[in-house]
Length: 243
Ligand SMILES: [Zn+2]
Ligand SMILES: [Zn+2]
Ligand SMILES: [Zn+2]
Image (cartoon, rainbow, N blue to C red; front, top):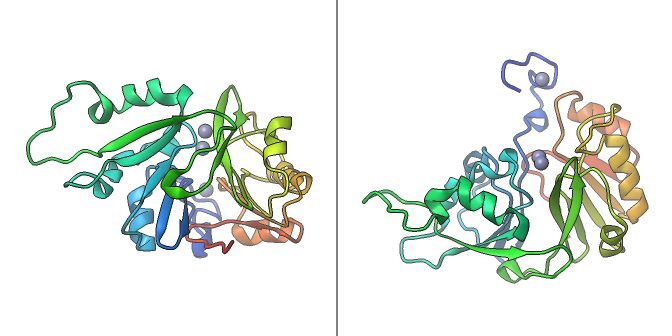
């Protein structure tokens, strides 16, 4: 947090240096990127990621979208446009916000590069296959908004969200690994799970491993680890999960 002197923000433990949410699903060298946060470029450089085959966007909030321009490195220059999957309800807003990418008749200054993104829209519960991965987009209430997570095989992901609808729970039934947003211990938040709430969701869905993400700066990695039951872990930047 800018200007913050709390123990998490001043921690030497690299797992306490939390950038905003993104993840990559990778199989046989094919990669699906989920979300384009403001730190996307730094994250990709740090992890040595040099190619992306498709993108899935959870929702239009700035903390999940404002690194979008850095996708230009993966498209253009004679390559196919990068498939960019987003829920139908965010199409209009995104096209307005990133008018220079999707706007009608936009002219690019010679010598400059903008991302070449092929927007493909999805709806809740209808399977898509970004980069060949079998993905079921799932809507989650997120305060007064909605955000989309997904199921991909044994993996369930709830990126932003505050509750799991009965339909969503059905789509997630039988998952082994859950990745879920959780801000902190204690106080309920209108748009996100607390750690206690996220732990309950993992238990209810029967996940054998639950990873907490989208964590704020009220508790260190070590403090969270000590405060959650076995089978639940705080995620951290650079974490790799084998499925
Ligand atoms: Zn802090
Ligand atoms: Zn959000
Ligand atoms: Zn968020």
